[in-house]
Image (cartoon, rainbow, N blue to C red; front, top):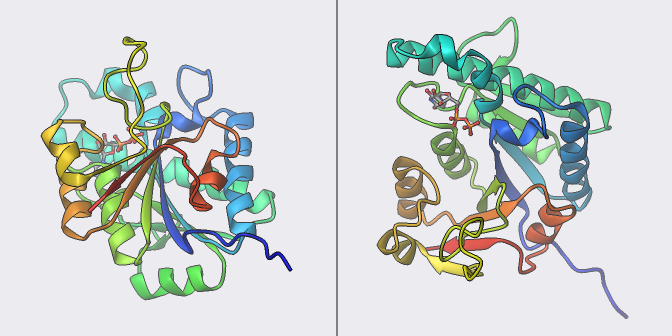
Amino acid sequence: MTTAAQPAHTRILLKLSGEALMGDDAFGINRSTIERMVSEIAEVVGLGVQVAVVIGGGNIFRGVAGGAEGMDRATADYMGMLATVMNSLALADAMNRQGLTARVMSAIDIQQVVEPYVRPKALQYLEEGKVIVFAAGTGNPFFTTDTAAALRGAEIGAQVVLKATKVDGVYTADPMKDPTATRYAQLSFDEAMVRNLGIMDATAFALCRDQKLPIRVFSIARPGALKRVVMGEDEGTLVYA
Ligand code: UDP
């Protein structure tokens, strides 16, 4: 008797950059791109995997970047965090439309719009099979949503942080510029540091490394890539402790 393959991970933290929602647009949210992304997420939820998402704000922030130039850094960062709230609402809405049950939890208190992040509640949602979208990053300026992904990933006991990028993994050199560049299937945190591979910003990277929380870098643009990652197939690059 053959049994269906089981997912390699049962709880994941997926980090999407805001730009992942743009498609080919210059900024903002592209409808078909967000819908396609949600179907990829729905596929892994269907496998019984508990999914939490952290989304960036770059796509929206681009639209206001001109005005933010020369601004006080902390104020601009709060604007960036608010941009992630917009993306989180759009993502959760698209998830609910596709039959998932999504909950947005914000690191900044804006209770009329979304509920605040409360760790036990987040854990309860995951156990109930709901998808959580963590909004407003860490809630603090001078951080990034990569750090929020590492932080929330560690807090909820995710087995891996999946960092979705445009490139399908970590390469020996920039594959857009150097055709001889090859993809690492896996490498350790120490190797990534020695080779200065810039997988996440330094704070996020250090947090994952200290917590022995593996990171997998992969391309969300490749159809089925998220499912292959979850099934433990050779997709993207695994950075391990
Ligand atoms: N941000 C912040 N603290 C956080 C997370 C985000 O101040 O904990 C701000 C910061 O200005 C950042 C912006 O929100 O540039 C958007 O986040 P990020 O750059 O990570 O988004 P992405 O580039 O992944 O879309």
